[in-house]
Image 1 (cartoon, one colour):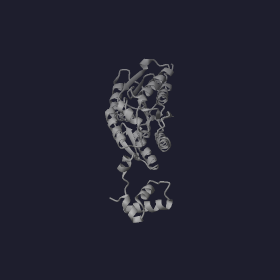
Image 2 (cartoon, helix red, strand yellow):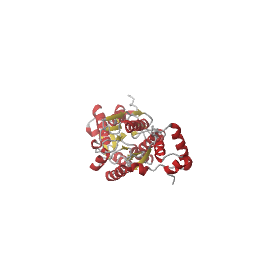
Image 3 (cartoon, helix red, strand yellow):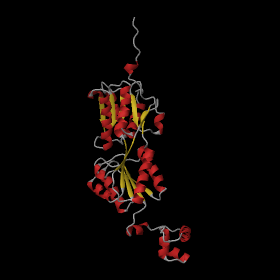
Image 4 (cartoon, one colour):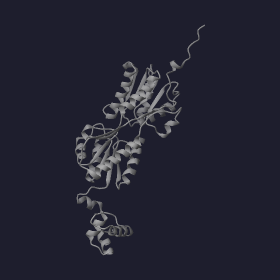
Length: 345
């Protein structure tokens, strides 16, 4: 393995000068830095990160802790963050928790032990108390979800307003029996989305019995399938359904595709998120579009600025992004409102 001593002997420089040149020390001339870097590249030199960390330096790694990489929200976030961090000389390390707080804790222990420069985390519903303590020693920011124990920095979506808009779209079309399939209320996102759904019903002066609510794991496609099956099997099945996560949306669409249910003739559907396939599913899915890419970029830029200027600054920071209703063919007034009136004889 090539060392700084080997580079120093080749260039007839001291080992300390080579080390400082590689670290971009301002005391070393640009000409010397260029010579050292050129020699290092030619000789195949690789920096010893472990040695640097033993001297108290942080790594150039930023951890991304997410529930499920199969969710296109999180894969998009990972992609955008990775590009953003790479341009700043950092590397993204992905950790998947499957919404298990003990798995989350193990990943945070590893990131702390490896002296990660920072962490972007989509937390579980009830993070372990040790997770909160570990994050106190690492610059970090919460994304999409938030938990009070993990600090006051958060980039998220206006979940309340997103679900209120989605539900109001059906209310305004005349639906009086509306189903909601979403995540559990113990998650901050789940609670806010459920609150937005109920607020729209109240705003539309619909009674509580107008709601049909199915809550479960937000990352479970199977929960989406089973929930819509149960809703449509009811004697007074909903004429419209609002969805509260992208994976649940996928599950519902898969289930509807394999049945004889016709959308929107038999039931109207408002999805969550806007994957490429949603625009051509059936009649085209009416859904709530979310600025995930822009939010991921903003989150990455904010964390980079903090790492480079004030890594110990815990000043509260919140960024809330709006959603937008994308109307396609999967929603229409309920069937009884579409029937033509009988002519008088």
